[in-house]
Length: 413
Image (cartoon, rainbow, N blue to C red; front, side, top):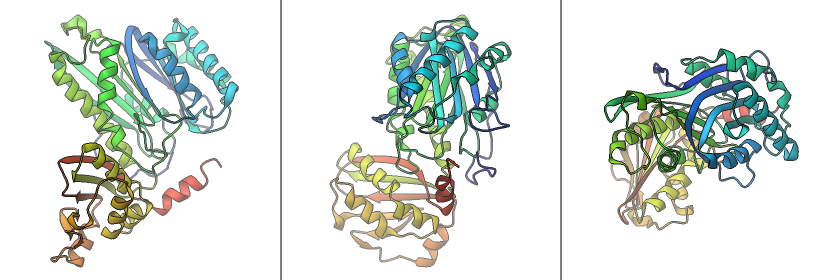
């Protein structure tokens, strides 16, 4: 964890209400760091539904493989998360570590190992000593309480500079239901599924299949539309848990994501995902600028997404923004290399609402002083108009600073 908080961190942290059927506890297990919490246990009431999306990396971590296998059961009783060690690229030892962690957790909780879900974040390639969980998880199971979401979010941080939480309350039928979420991630961020590590909890009575459909659709324009450095992690995991406790207060049981009674919930669910995804972008390693890239006039939405990501992942674009330089030539470069339909002579580009390029050339009204002043803002909006169709998309990223190099140059030391 960084000792200084990102200047882009949210100014206000929401009050995170308790969710019926969820209890949390954290501890210091000494996974990698000393004198900091590095283990989170979330206890879930019997019958809790679970859904998940995971990294598309062909080299996934052992916990990702564990969760994928257990997701078929659709039920969860506990989530165990550790920071400091990703338990990735650890071979048979890594698989044995996940199995032992699940065994210890199942004994502490009093459930089947198939109802234990795991996530790990930190250094890749180092064996995880799961014996460090022995005793710790038992104490956590005894001390778990409903409300301390900030401590939970802090326990899963690595190079994050602030804990990332979000909440929403909405009506489902005649009952009030709550959605709480937390996330961690600041580097190795180009999710292509979900993100780094993120966990969503609700008391809504939603069946596993419906929850899975909600989650899969929800990530597309939230977590999948964020990139910090273009690198997809081996450990990316997003899990959602629905305890169903609100059924006691009149919330209808939902079996299909298309159920019209779920409309307001779906909107709130997506808002929580979007909030967390933006916080990840705000905490990009070394970031000083939050960057929103909008591409419009593309042939299709998918084409607009690929062009936006090409811009967002360009080191030259990102360093120009860090230097507060509205270098539209680098944006042109990123558009051109994306491999998508584009016409140089129809291209227009603007920075923070100021058009700098039009119809394939510098805008006739371009004012260097005006644009330079606009680039000093902590939030930069780049808009690219292709003039080819109706396809539109938006992604979030951040600038690329010297601090990013410093953080990642000695991450293992």
